[in-house]
Length: 414
Ligand SMILES: Cc1cc2nc3c(=O)[nH]c(=O)nc-3n(C[C@H](O)[C@H](O)[C@H](O)COP(=O)(O)OP(=O)(O)OC[C@H]3O[C@@H](n4cnc5c(N)ncnc54)[C@H](O)[C@@H]3O)c2cc1C
Image 1 (spheres, rainbow, N blue to C red):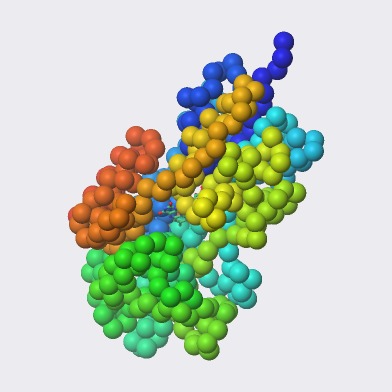
Image 2 (cartoon, helix red, strand yellow):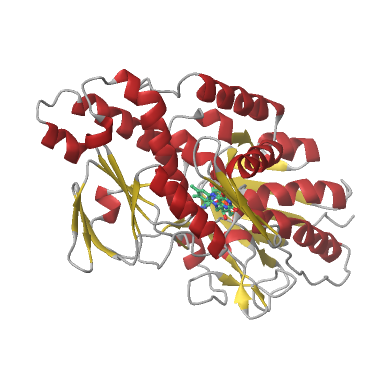
C-alpha cells in the first residue's frame, strides 16, 4: 500500500495555525500525515502582546496551546527547535532528530531587526515574543519602584523617561498603552512622583509620519491622540546607536532614558537565511502565486517569511495577511496531494486597526477611516473574535474588564 504523503509545517504562528485549521477542512484523514513543528507549544497572538508588556493582560491570555488544533484535526505536533532543512534529501533537521517530508511549509515568521546598529541588542528591549513582553512589564514596574527611592526630581526624570524606537503599529500601541498604565494604574500608587513633570514617553522614528504602512488619515489620527496622551513624537530622526540608558540619533541628538524599547522592524530568522531558495532583497523567500518557493514543487511558504508580489508590490508582513493566505495554501496543498493543479492567490486586504489607549482607536475599513469609541469597539470585538479558545477569550474579556474598572497588573510578579 502507498504511504500517505507527509506534510511538515515549520512554525505554528498565524500562518501555521490557520493552515492547520484550513487543512482539517480540506484533507480527508487518510489522505496525508500532517506534522507541525514549533519551538513553543503555543501560538502567540502578537497583536495583543503590547498589552502583556503594559500589564493589561496576563501572558496566558495571548498563548493558545498548539496541541489543541493539531490533535482535533488528527494531525501531530512536536515541540522542537528547527535547525535547518535539507531540501535535496527532503528532511527537516530538528534538535530532536531528522524529520522526512514530501511537502514542507516554511512558516517560521520573522525576527526583530536591529539593522546592525551598535548597542541595540544589549541595551534596548525588543517586543517580539512572550518573554520580551514580560521583561518589559517587569522593567517598567521595577523602574517606578527605583524612582520612588530617589530624592532628586532630576534623577527621577531621567529614570522615568521611556523611549520607544519605531513608530510602526507596535511602537505606537506600546507608547499609548504605557501612558494609560502610568496615568490610570501607577499614578495613584506613587504619591512621591510628580507624573506630569517627571514621567515622559518619547517615540522616535526615521520616517516622515507614524504608521507609514497605513492610510495617512490613520497616521494623523494617531499623531493627535499621542499628543493628547503627552507622548512626544520625534519623526524624521533615524537612530544610530543605543548605549546603556542613551539613544543617539544620526543627526547628533541624544536621549537619556531609563527604558528603551525597540520596535524597529523585522528581518529573516537564521533558519530562512540558511535555506538555498530564491530570496528577495529583504531576505524573504520568493514564492509564486501558488505559494511555492522558486521552481520547487515540494517547498511552500507564506506569512512573514514569504515574499508574495501582487501588482508589483510585496504583501505586508502582517498577521491578517498570513490568515487570509492560509485557505489558499491549504487548498493548494490538498490539490498537490491529489495530483491536481494549484490555484493562484489574490489578496484583498480587510483594512487596518490601531489601538490608541483607553476607549480610543483608529480604524480603516474600505475608504472609511474613523476613530474614537466606534473604532475602539470595532478593535475590541475584532480581537475578541479572532483569539482562539474559550479559555483565552474568557481571560481576555475578564482582564479587559478588570483593567478598565480597576487597575492593571502592577505587582512585580514573575
Ligand atoms: C508585538 C507585535 C505586534 C503585532 N501586531 C500586529 C497587528 O496588530 N496586526 C497584524 O496584522 N500583525 C501584527 N504583527 C505582525 C504579526 O505578528 C506577523 O505578521 C505574523 O505573526 C506573521 O505570522 P507567521 O506565521 O508568518 O509568523 P509568526 O506568527 O511569528 O509564527 C512563527 C512561528 O514559528 C516558530 N518558529 C520560528 N523559528 C522556529 C524554529 N527555528 N524552530 C521552531 N519553531 C520556530 C515561532 O515560535 C512561531 O510560533 C505584530 C507583530 C508583533 C511582534
